[in-house]
Amino acid sequence: MFESLSERLNAVFRKLRSRGKLSEEDVNEALREVRRALLEADVSLPIVKEFVNHIRERAVGEELSKSMTPGQQVIKYVRDELIALMGSQTARLNFAAKAPSVFMLVGLNGSGKTTSSVKLASYLKGSGHQPLLAATDVYRPAAIKQLEVLAKQINVPVFTIEGCQDPVEISVKALAQAKETGKDVLIVDTAGRLNIDQELMEELERQKEALKPSEVLLVVDAMTGQDALQVAKDFNERLGLSGVIMTKLDGDARGGAALSVHKATGAPLKFMGVSEKLSGFEPFHPDRMASRILGMGDVLSLIEKAEQTMDKEKALELQDRLKQNKFDLNDLLDQMQQIRRLGPLQEILKMLPGGIGAAFDKLPVGEAQIKHIEAIIQSMTPQERRDPDLLNASRKKRVALGSGSDVAEVNALLKQYNELRKFMKGIGQMTKNKRGRRMMPFKFPF
Image (cartoon, rainbow, N blue to C red; front, side, top):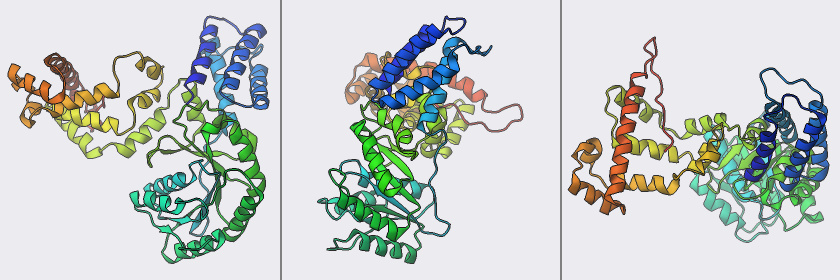
């Protein structure tokens, strides 16, 4: 969602790369562009003014680091201010000293509150917790059913009371159920409204008083722009928010709400929804997000994602096959499928530094082509995948027909495979270091 902001900011930095020292005029010109970029990203004017003033105070007349160009120095200032704007430190969940911990999710209808409740449950379950979901949205049609259907996909129980219209009663009994069944986290999906009203806030205040939650998390739709900030302020004044969950950060919103919500409320942004999938839910790291915005990548998040999705046993098997020079088309197919489980290839490459994501858009390679390559390999027999040399003219024609391609495309894939195999042979010889210890093989993102 920050593509436009990233492009604008990097255009500013490119203009400064040839300067030997930053004059006040240089800084003012650059900051005018930074200001314009942030405003276009829907960051509020008061926050933009403070942001720009902080950078100006640091940049005017300051001597450059010997290891940095002027452009790099400005990038550092902007990155530092972006991190401060978004909260400086990664905000962790607060757990109660004695289980179960109670997390209340609040927000308006349409913000993604129910889905976020299940995503949070899935995230906690993956971290070793035993969550229970409580359905207390008794007003929105099918809200309880939606929660039950989604929770079933991750095998997490939902507490409901059929016919009960009192969210406070449901909450109290859900807490008792969590204690009785040994659940260490109770996630309460509260009722929402189309807009903030007195009745909604009083009801949520009663729930908070009854539950004494460790977390009151506001779910905000990033697509609502500056309206999200006023919603956050109103909820914070009445409930004392402990954090924010920003949804739809994978959409085409301009990003101002994500950049501004901490500054506007003091409540840290703790999680972000990055896809419609229940697994598309990540902790929010201000420093990593700032690096993404500035085109510096986010390798740490990529590594964490890989550790969660990659099959370690298969990786070790591949290492052994590389050492024996047995890398075949089955291995190539498996590696491609593992990489794709990380998410859309464009998003993966944007997490790498050096502008690789931007360069990727200019290359004739994408998800469709990767799927096409998979189709070609899957149209081969097991014997042909193990020994591509078996593929004579008639076999190639059969593979082409089976995969909806032509023989030229099959030949192109085989040529790329042979070049890759030579390279992988060299990698295989490097999978032992000087002490002979095992090392993980390199994984190719295609």
